[in-house]
Length: 489
Ligand code: NAD
Image 1 (cartoon, protein in one colour):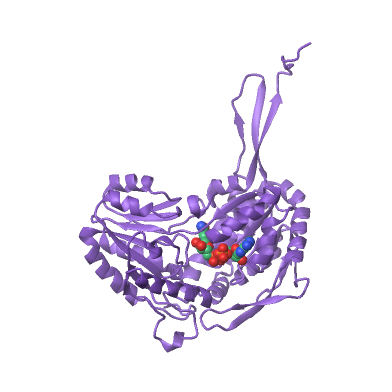
Image 2 (cartoon, rainbow, N blue to C red; image 1 turned 90 degrees about the vertical axis):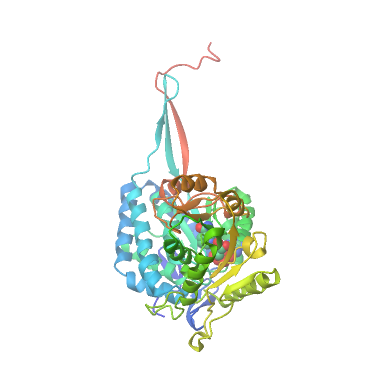
C-alpha cells in the first residue's frame, strides 16, 4: 500500500520505539492493507513532548498565519480528493460514492472553515463599573490529546484538528486502530504545506495502551474524544490526574419520527439515508424509526422495498450503496442484535443476516435490517451501530415524544411533518443536541455538533468548538489609577 504508515512525531515520520506494528485490514475481503507503526506509552510521551515544545511559538503566531496554513491544507486536500476517498474506502469500507461525495470534500471544507475562523475568534470587553476596563481574551488550552473512532476517520480528523489548530493549540491525535491510513495521509499533507514540527503529531495505536496513556498524560491539557460511551467514562476517569478539560462525543440512539402529515416519499428516502448511510455506523444514525399509526403500513411498505433494494458491494464500485462493516468483530456484534431482537419478541421485517452473494463472502457485510420492536427492548435502547433499525408505532405526539426521549442518549434525532407548529414544538422538546426537520443527518462546519446526557458534552464545529478549544481569560485594568478604598490609610 503506497501510503504513510509510521508515527508522525515532531515533524517526522518515524517507527515506534520498540518497532511494533499492527495490521490494518480491507473490510471488503479481509486482506491486509498495510502494517502500521504501533505507538505505545513511550511514543506518546515523545509526541506530547514535541507538542509541548511547539506550543509557545504556535500559540503566539498571528492568528491569520495559522489560518493561512489551514487554508493551504484545505487546498492540498482538494487537490487529491479522489486518492483520499479511495484510501478511506479501502480502510473503512465506505462506498466510494460516499467517501468521494461526502467525506473527502467535507474534510477539506472543515479545514477551510476553521482556516477562515482563525482570525475571527474575538474576545470581548465587559461593561463593568466605572474606572475599570475588563476584557476577555480567548487563549488556547495548550497541548490537546485527540482520540477518534473508526467510523469517519478522515472527516473526524478535520473536525478535531481544525478548531484546535485555529485556536493555537498543538495536537497529539490517536486514530482508531482499525482505520489509521487517511489520518496519516493528512499528516503528510500537514508537513507538505509547512506546519511547524510538533504542532501536529499522529500516534496510531490501541486504545488501551496509546489512548489510555494519552488520556492520563499530565502534559496534555485537554482531551477531545469521539467514541463509545463506555470508553468516554474511562476517559473522564483518566483525565482526573491533572484535571484536564474533557470534550466527549459519544454514542447515540437517534429517534426518527414520521408523522401522518409528512411527505412520505421524502420521509422514506430520508429515513433510509438516516440509518443505512455508512452501513449505519454513525453516532447520529436514525436507528429508531417511530411511525405514526395512520401511515405506518404505507410507510413500511415503501421503506422495506427500499431497504431490500440497496446495492451492497465492493466499496470501490461507484454503483455500491452499502459497503461492509468496518471489522469482522463489529459485524458479529451487529448480527448478534438480530438474535437479541428475536429473543425479545421482535419481528425481523427485512435483512437480519449476511448477504447471500458469494462475491461478498470474505467481507464483513450485513444486509440492511429492519426490526419491529417495543420501546423498552434492548434493540431500542442500546446502540447497535450498524445497518439495523427498530420500528415502533405510536398513536399521538405525546407518545412519540416520550419514546423519543426514552433512552439514556441525547445526540441526534429527526422528525417528518408538514405541520410547522408541530415541527418547532417537537424539535424544542426533543432531548438531543441536534434535530433535523424534514431531513436527517445534515452537518456543516459552522453548526454546533454534539450531544447531551450519555451522548457526552462539549461541541464540535462553529464558534462553539473554538470556545471548547480556548480558555476565557478575564483581565482587569484600573484605568482611573484609583486606590482601592478598603485599606485606605
Ligand atoms: P471506542 O470507544 O471503542 O473507540 C474510540 C477510540 O477510543 C479509538 O481510537 C480507540 O482506540 C480509543 N480507545 C479505546 N479504549 C480507550 C481507552 N481506554 N482510553 C483511551 N482511548 C481508548 O469506539 P469505536 O467502537 O471506535 O467507535 C464507535 C463509537 O463511537 C460509537 O459508540 C459511536 O456512537 C461513537 N461515535 C460518536 C460520535 C459523536 O460525535 N458523538 C461520532 C462517531 C462515533
